[in-house]
Image (cartoon, rainbow, N blue to C red; front, top):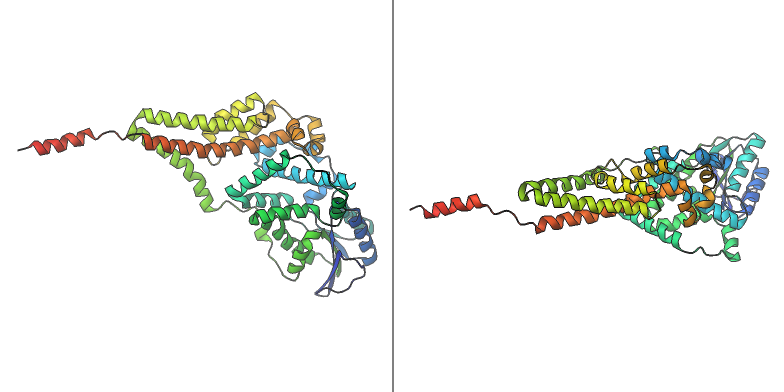
Length: 414
């Protein structure tokens, strides 16, 4: 139940719960007004504790913006985190562009709350779920169809000419949580993605705010999370189910192994029933289609010639093994032959804001190579399977000569 509070602002909700007073401040991550509101609220409320919509990773990135300089791109690829890192960079770059337009550092209001807690000796609770888990759960929720939808939307968005932000739009962004608005648009496009990016975090934030010690709490969150937090703040939620990366479902694992198994079984069946000529034709067709798909996936993002060759060779084999990914091999080769320079890591946040910059920066280009090669190989697998099926259906079954002679012999017997 909401009651009038000490700080009069439409962006502050005061929630009375279990003899506690929670001042819920909805902010825009790129607004000077939000910074001023947070500072004023903490000063007037004098809370026992502060909760902020940050996790350890995001706080470290704000405190140390040069952390990218320590990134080992080869380790990221080997651990299968290339897609997650690329998504993190794109989100950070989006916020950075907005901050530049609005003349404020993204997340400044969160850092203002953290500084206030340090200056006043007030406990500060990091109430948001780890961004790595959020992005992994989001990617896991997509599925194949969702993956293609997001990839298409991202490609179209990068190729479109950036639109100038009008003064009216700037003023609107100052009063809203712009990043969360974008995520909500994606959520309408893909409901499962919305659940991982928005709804689950509403539950997580509400529970962590509940767990923050003290009778008077100031909670600083993005404005878009306020309605969800208010819905869940009275509930005791078990966060274990939404705090881990879900394993692949049994059906998805079966599906992942079934396609390579069927393709290999089909080739072996063709060898036994139609002879080595058909078998050789099927193997050659698979090799060229998937190999060219892998090479094209690397080439479109300007990979090194050796990376393109490695993608061509690896794709036909990796496509038949669900635990391998051609993109991993391509990315590792690219990272070896074009080692990231210090300037690539220093300038990655600026470079990733444009297609040209992403392709010129060795770090972001390597991450793109991983994603692009995997995407093209997936498409190549579909075309390859279709061609193999066509070859199998067009190949005549050898005549059963022995059986025919036997039947004829029976008929001629007096």
